[in-house]
Length: 113
Image 1 (cartoon, helix red, strand yellow):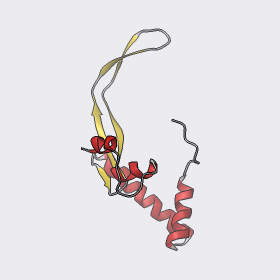
Image 2 (cartoon, rainbow, N blue to C red):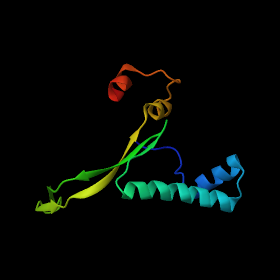
Image 3 (cartoon, helix red, strand yellow):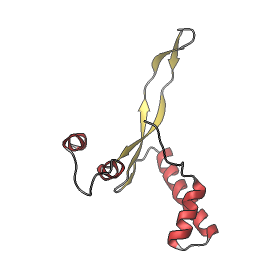
Image 4 (spheres, rainbow, N blue to C red):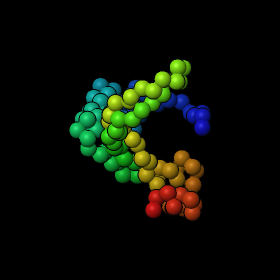
């Protein structure tokens, strides 16, 4: 899957808050930074961040496993680590797939059940 849209940056988010909420550019920037910091802090503590109608950010623990160096074929241990996972909500899935509000296909319903 290749993305055809532009990449949205912090600056773009700050500008959107400035345009739509009416805060000053400085306040908009501080607001966006505060929200991102709160999300980051929660994830660092291992908490799940659930944004209604958007999705959930979760931290999962991955155990140690054996990997392979693709150039040499040598087995290399991959240490245990925490990874962040994003699970989109059913509403977000519908919107990005261009479906009308509330109408889910059978395959989408099976994924959310």
